[in-house]
Image 1 (tube, helix red, strand yellow):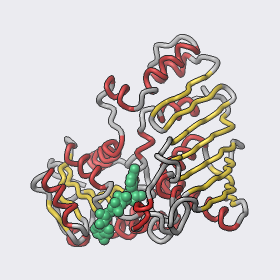
Image 2 (cartoon, protein in one colour):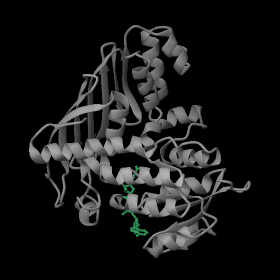
Image 3 (cartoon, helix red, strand yellow):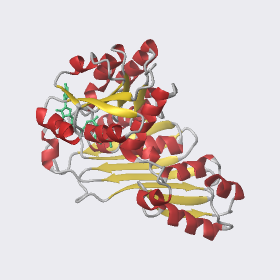
Image 4 (cartoon, helix red, strand yellow):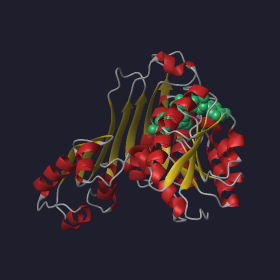
Length: 361
Ligand SMILES: NC(=O)c1ccc[n+]([C@@H]2O[C@H](COP(=O)([O-])OP(=O)(O)OC[C@H]3O[C@@H](n4cnc5c(N)ncnc54)[C@H](O)[C@@H]3O)[C@@H](O)[C@H]2O)c1
């Protein structure tokens, strides 16, 4: 897209988590927040108060006619993503789509088809890949430093009050599921990103502490094509919200994190190559552990203080999308990457419903 030297024009549809997209666009050096769209006027007024000059649209298609807009963040209820992303791309806008990309693999494929047909860019929000401790874990796996990965244990133990489920959240129709599709799809994405392609899933689900359609608790056993196995637990009943455990075990060591806080880094056979890759000063196994925990053990903030250029959360994905448009490259997560977590989630639900193991091709 030729923006003729002007800043990238950014718009956000849906002002729940969309507020974080609006904040990110408003502070970006390379973009400006042009417009927001929501059915609720008060939500738009709050943004205009914060960022004067932002245009308000009650109607999504009206907003798409605005020539100042280059990118639209789709932050609407999950089952609306494909429909609204298609409308935006056909109107000549690039799209950044909230997770999950949509609630079925078919809807995600529709987004990919329209992306290819229109030549517009489509990125998907899985910001947890940019948590500061996730990249070193991924690098330890990919470089072979962790040895052969054979086991993962993943558990998203969160809490949601009943009133959270009084609207579209937790419905099969609009959310595509409950604690797994909504709260845990990020961790499903991280699991497949770290452990590899899934071969089969075998699952149970139930509703324990909410009045809702779908599930508030799931438990799965997952086998990967590389032979590794994992357990994956999700709940929105763990008062008051406990942790997101990500634990990966290889023949050469163990790494454990609570989403963005590294808890354990125990890897035998110190590797100079890995130390170089991460820029560590460490010269042996103990020093590596100490340095990794000092760097990544305190959550994002400690490392961010040292490396203020490293941005995380929604800002990281919005900046990536803006940069992708400016430099005519692909965004970090394309639709066919984001479809993987939706396929896994849908397989879990199928297995839990039928009582049978679901196999992937
Ligand atoms: N990446 C993350 O960490 C993260 C966090 C929360 C939510 N999400 C995702 O973001 C999406 C939105 O979730 P939420 O929790 O913010 O929902 P929400 O219900 O809080 O917000 C959705 C907004 O969309 C508006 N809306 C609905 N239909 C509309 C229409 N036709 N035109 C314009 N606006 C319309 C609603 O009025 C509402 O303000 C979901 O897909 C969810 O999974 C992602």
